[in-house]
Amino acid sequence: MPNRFLDLKKFWLFLIPALLLAATIGGAHAGELRGTGDLGIIIERAASRIQIIETTTQTKLFTVEGMGDLSHASVVYSRDARYAFVFGRDGGLTKVDILTGTIVKRVVQGGNSIGGAISQDGRLVAVSNYEPGGVKVFSSDTLELVADIPAVYDGDMLSKTVGLVDAPGNRFVFSLYDAGETWIADFSNGDTPKITKFKNIGKLPYDGLITPDARYYIAGLFGEDGLSLLDLWHPEKGMRRILDGYGRGEEPLPVYKMPHLEGWAEASGTLFLPAIGRHEVLVLAMNDWKEIGRIPVHGQPVFAMARPDGRQVWVNFAHPKNDVLQVIDVETRQIVKTMTPGRAILHMEFTPRGEQIWVSVRDRDVVEVYDTATMEKIAELPADKPSGIFLTARANKTGL
Image 1: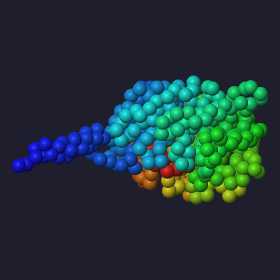
Image 2 (image 1 turned 60 degrees about the vertical axis):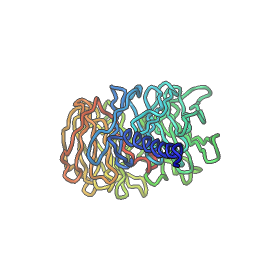
Image 3 (image 1 turned 30 degrees about the vertical axis):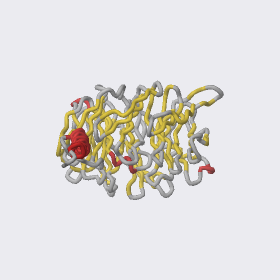
Image 4 (image 1 turned 135 degrees about the horizontal axis):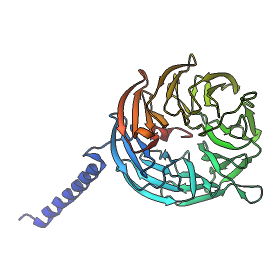
């Protein structure tokens, strides 16, 4: 006689996993399984939310609400590119599962944050703070606090921290805006960092970047014409000045928006940098860090970003001339395209192999997508006051 109890048990053992799998797949998006390689995030700065998008078909997958103040938000990704860590201006650090479009955890860790980084091994997430001045470091798994690094100078003063990047060896490098210093926080030997300080690097370092090979850290200086360079292979040599006095003899212009060094415009052994308060992109040779040219552009550049193959540099501009994009041909150093997508072009992001560039146009409430070969628009997505665009290719790049 058949054992009906055993048959019923087998039935439920089969059915329950099947139902769970169906629910998981359905929750992912319209019954699809997908990877994360062509996904990304658009910041909707005025609405406290993000869009999770796919670049292959230029479509929105999810909207995630409740993200806090996103007026200067940035994003880094876990090493598997599934989780996004969103840094909000209100001090919020939010971990988002981009496959399900859900918030995993959110903490408010400071009063005024300005970006962050994830360690080489993916274990630590660091946040750069204006208030209180310093860097806080969290577990990427739980968002529990691992280390608090106050940016103390001159006895008891706290500095704004800027230019935070990850570096090889589970190190974080950042600069102190008020103090004129750059620090390395080394977590290679555990959760108590070794701090190395470089003082008197120049007046008011406003941003920092690390070269794609992760060897050099460069701090831009707002208080004087020049940049400070640190060789991370030989930090014992200290920082040295490059492009010192590049504006000498010229009347400085009012600066309406700080240029951003994030994004890197390195191509064919040359570096393209926005000049502070000038209508120029500066060109440096990376073998000796000396100026080899200047490119006149439409206005004061904010971002100068190189296409992944290094053939083009795309430039956007500060108010009041912020409705224009220009494309520089790296070989000739000439402007080959000028376009006017609309007012307040705030950010750009290339797809991993550079066939597309995504451009946020805040005042038209759209993100435009361009074919970088033809430089023609191929798609447009609605977005509420979009700013930063961050694709998952960043998960595999140092400093982004």
